[in-house]
Amino acid sequence: MDAQRFSELQKRIQKSDESALKEIYNEYCKKTRWIAYRIVGNFGFVEDVLNDVLIKVWKSGNKKVKDPDNWIYKTAENTARDYYRKHIKWLKMSVSLDSLSENGTFVKTESETYNYVEFQSLINKLDETEREIIIKKTVFSYTHQEIADELKIPLGTVLWHYQNALKKLKVEFSK
Image (cartoon, rainbow, N blue to C red; front, side, top):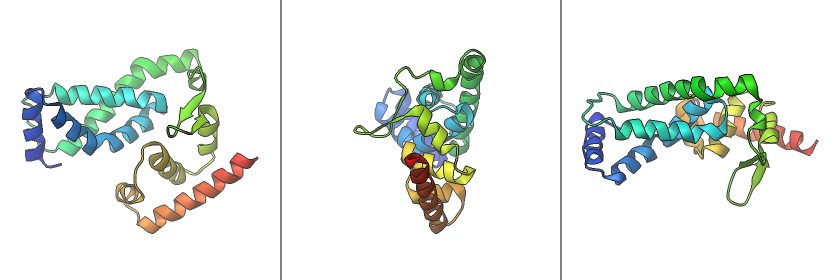
């Protein structure tokens, strides 16, 4: 998003126009979630970080933002780090993160659920690139092209990694 469009949306937000915030959300939610996940390491806390980032956007008012992409992603990174320090670091000292979910489920779609601990242990068996592609595709609903663009690798390579990761997960899941 260019600075002019972002500034226009900020002005609309100052007038309590929720549709302007929704437009910013739609533009930045996927990558912001990914940044948050990389830092906090838990799917359950990603939405909290995203909400905090949106609150900061809502409160940004007349702040002149020259590079909206950089500002949003840096805000997401800093917010996730703050969230980690305030919430997760302390929790890790007192309880395993895997035991935080009372029912132990991770929701993929409305009709499918996976045990969070099982899902986490399965994807941890993938190499870093495969894990990133699987998480972005299945959890954060990235398209293959969006993943290719973000990772700066060809679409065919993303598809190849994705297929290999699915094969590995299928083998692991059937054990």
